[in-house]
Amino acid sequence: MALEKWLAITSLALFAMFAGEMISVYSFMINVPEDFEFASAFSADPKILQFISIGVAPAGVLAAVAFIMSKRYGSKQIGGLIVAGGVILLAGMIVCYSILGELDETYLTDAVKYVPILFMALSVPVFVFGFYLMKNIKQRPKKEYF
Image (cartoon, rainbow, N blue to C red):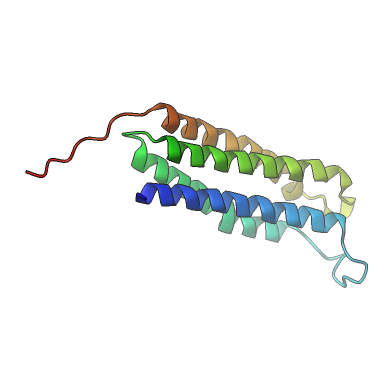
């Protein structure tokens, strides 16, 4: 596989990891154990910022690099992987947004409320760039060996 395919696969995996991490934090805030000694002092904001920095930010950079490397000739595989990453990101953020109604008022902060909306909106450019790669298919230039 070419380098750009591996970058697109890695970005897909990081998008999935970010969605899973966010869903796990939101479901933890719904079902905080009774014997959890820091339940009153728990804040999801640092965890959400950590998940953004180790999950979705590198995923977006890797998807952008894969797009830049393959935009001259286009690729259905790379475009499909980028679109799949956008779908996973959108689905994960929809799940997180649907959980907001079940959260206790003590856990509702600005980051908890607005991060799912922000990344739902940011999944649209991921779709656009992925569909661009899928549509823009040109022949690769032939290598001249002699």
